[in-house]
Image (cartoon, rainbow, N blue to C red):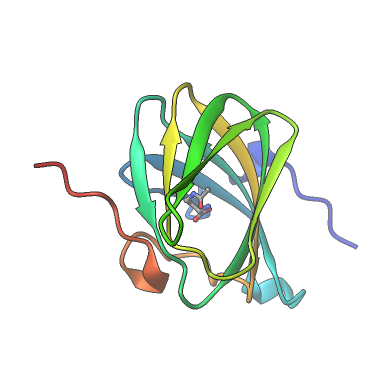
Length: 128
Ligand code: 9YT
């Protein structure tokens, strides 16, 4: 069994920073579980265009407030603490954070650890 503490990830290579988020990668591909688990903080006031074409992701919000707009149907889903959204159809979406949002993310298949933005279908919204 493994015990992994967030404080042991912060400041290491497994703390990966994107433009709008910081992802602390707790369990990665090398552990051999078939999925990865991340503790991600999304920055307040940001909008991120995300489309994981090669992964399924569940996202459980444990702190903060924002919304997800799914682009296939333009539905806006309010997201706040104790709410999970599951991208079961590799859904392309916009994630908007009103406040900092802390999310526990599970990816299948597992990320290897270095993925940010364009690799693996994450595309940041380019501001005009
Ligand atoms: C919620 C979300 O997908 N944020 C982007 C970062 C991603 N969760 C990651 O790499 O941990």
